[in-house]
Length: 124
Image (cartoon, one colour):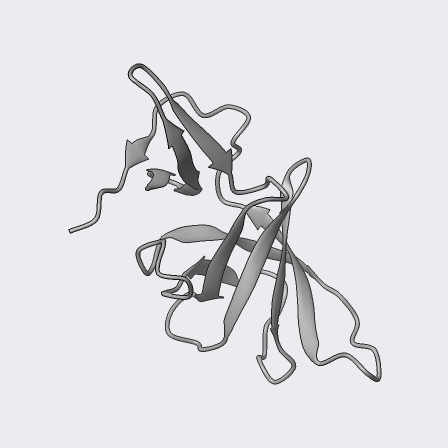
C-alpha cells in the first residue's frame, strides 16, 4: 500500500504485523516509483532512492525535462495511484554520447526523516 502525507509520497508498506507496519521510504535504495512530469507534460520515467535524501530518475533522451520540473507518480508498475507528488528536479545530469536515457536528481517533496502521521492509500 502507498503511504502519503499532504505534501506527497512517503513510500510503500512492505510488511504488516498486528501493531505495526514497515514502510520502505522513497529515498531507500530498494524503492522505485514510476514518475512523469506534472501537468501532462509527458515523459514516463523510473525514480529510485539515493540515500540519504534524494532520488535518481531516468527518462528517455527525448523528454524535455529541466531543473524545477515537478514529478508525480504514473501508472508504471501499478503500485501507486497516478498524480501523487514525488519531488522536484534539482539537477539534470549531462548526456554522454552513448547514453540512451536522461538522468536527473530529484529532491523529494517529503522529508521522510520528520514524518509523524501518514495516510495509507487502499486499493479500490
